[in-house]
Amino acid sequence: MQAVEREGLPVPTMSFIATPQTMHFPEVLPLQSGASIRAFDLAYETYGTLNADRSNAVLVCHALNASHHVAGVYAGQDKSEGWWDNMIGPGKPVDTDRFFVIGVNNLGSCFGSTGPMHQHPDTGEVYGADFPVVTVEDWVNAQARLLDRLGIQQLAAVLGGSLGGMQALSWTLQYPERMRHAVVVASAPNLTAENIAFNEVARRAIVTDPDFHGGHFYRHGVIPKRGLRIARMIGHITYLSDDVMNEKFGRQLREGLDLKYSTQDIEFQIESYLRYQGDKFSDYFDANTYLLITRALDYFDPARSHAGNLTRALARAQARFLLVSFTTDWRFSPQRSREIVKALLDNRRSVSYAEIDAPHGHDAFLLDDARYMGVMRSYFDSIFKEQQP
Figure 1 (cartoon, rainbow, N blue to C red):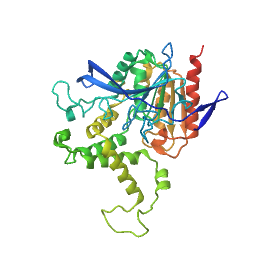
Figure 2 (cartoon, one colour):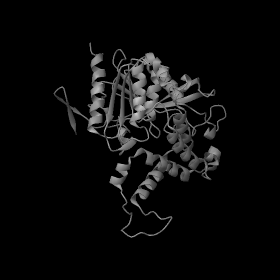
Figure 3 (cartoon, rainbow, N blue to C red):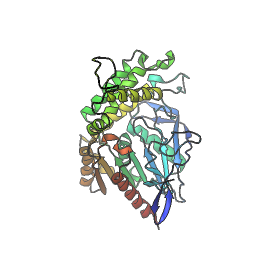
Figure 4 (cartoon, helix red, strand yellow):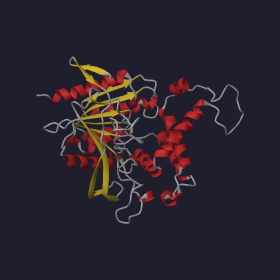
């Protein structure tokens, strides 16, 4: 068991047992599109203990292909660590001996919350392509309802990376009085045209797969795996930096040193790696969910209703902020985080900003860079200390 020192005492950092939960909501949830959804479930997990005055809750918002399983492991299951297990747990930067951490799976996902794979409450048929389009703002509203049920009126912090960071930012605008801190990691105030283009190419790969059947492939007993594989391969390229790909794979051939001079065989190691990632993804992710979540990414733009002025858009925010970016993240570059920082400073908000020189690209927010972990630990230490009498 590894241990860290905190106030002179060793604190275990091994993973704990996590227990998934589900909460049902029979009431109607209006959506930003004008549609609505009712009789939906949200899957979630909690870690740590809610204190007596319910002031130590931290909400963690997930990115595209993640879920409510943020930390810990499932009893009796190997390789079931939560996707941010290096960040959250006893003695870790977000210390569950101090904070009550909540991970929630968003509507439209394929990991337990109501989504395209579930039955419509009125028809009894699987939603499929008929599942309503959801936005970041819709997810935040659903999360707020979960917190209402848990009896949490104000959060110590909302934390998220990538698409999760967009949700954290949206929380500060939709429910500014319900949170004290926003921690936005490797994120942006909206997508660039290039990012929207990558999402669109990935979606076209899925919807043009002959097994997609207009999104109702469940009725046909098939899965559009070819499209999902390509979508994942495209996405995965954008998560890594050029330096990481060159270091890990370079121009190494898969088998031996001789070229096959084939247009269809897998020859380079990077090709083999991307196909492996695509195959694995197509075995567990839902195609309609992929379409929904990438559209939510495309639509997010809090400045849109303020004539593109981000400073005016963020005027509602009351929280204190930590923003973190990574130098080699070309999908959500440091420049995008700096846009948020400037808009918040223009509004005289309290902002801390860390730009980490890390080689890992967008995926750096999930990895164990010591400087990054140090920034996060220090910030959450300060949140904990401000709560002390």
